[in-house]
Image 1 (tube, rainbow, N blue to C red):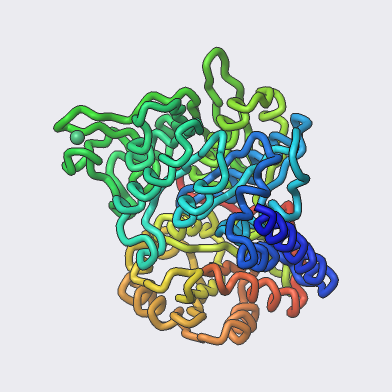
Image 2 (cartoon, rainbow, N blue to C red):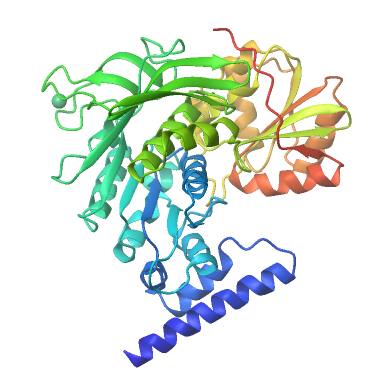
Length: 463
Ligand SMILES: [Zn+2]
């Protein structure tokens, strides 16, 4: 007991010391302090989370960072103190780092909004007793780590069984996520009703669209993207659960979108500057969680109106008199949505920087599943493939119909960026996997780029 206490104190001390040293060295520390502290005392997460209430965990393939950042903002606007790993470091070391920075012993501490990687959910929930777990979606991502979506869903189920008292907030439009409910606990669903962008046939990649119990293909009345939509099993009748929180009357706006946020006994019109249907889901998830935690609808409306994505989503910049966007891509659905968002009618030079390091996912076969149509239809001037898997990307683009004159392969990222800036167009689009992202930012900064926080990509997608 005594020994444990000493170890725990030592872990906290060393973790905070590491955070301090990182800060003094001018480095951002989102994982290292937690990594060190967990090495010293692996049970630290539970200790650190003790004084926090409520603890909200956000997991799923896409939208974790935006959803948890927005939720943290909502709680703060309602007057709560919030601890959050808002930078997207969502493995146990990142969670521990956030808690080291924010947790203040026992008693009535701040709320915690923690984004947790799907693969780390079991480890985190073993120690942290969450009050609310939000699952955004389960799309194909990082195949080598998670094998199949079914397996992922059952491992999440196992992780959730460790916190039987936690409420679940689930995306009803994702059959795999919806199937996580039904173990007797309180489950609340959110959903997005048909939008002008909904399709009756899947335009993206088909994935996870089987009935979780009968394994027969689900029948969809419409799709939003991926396997998200309104579905029903023709065999057993299992269907999309009704959402306690719903997004209705979605409209794409010049700058973002608007929708009716519908709940129990009311509805409010939300407008958001964030692009894409996938951000409507993020707003719905965070808004629903906020409502469950007592955030006023008027606060939700005000915060959503001004909330812009953090780093690593769509980042705007100016460089050499040109406008540019830098977007993180990591799976077929996310990349297709990103292309739909940033590729417009303006001639653009692209840099597509693909790596296959552990944090990117080692298997790059997902590139073949990306719906490249928005890119193919846009007036691209040049597409430069870069990164460790530049050639894979180039082959993929070639077979998709990109003209060879427009295609270049420059694995060295700096050379690729310099080449792109030389193109006689005034719009740069940079798509990057995770491990190239920080390097991209650094190189762009070195080349004189000014970041434009309030900048939104020019959208000119046919309705
Ligand atoms: Zn069925």
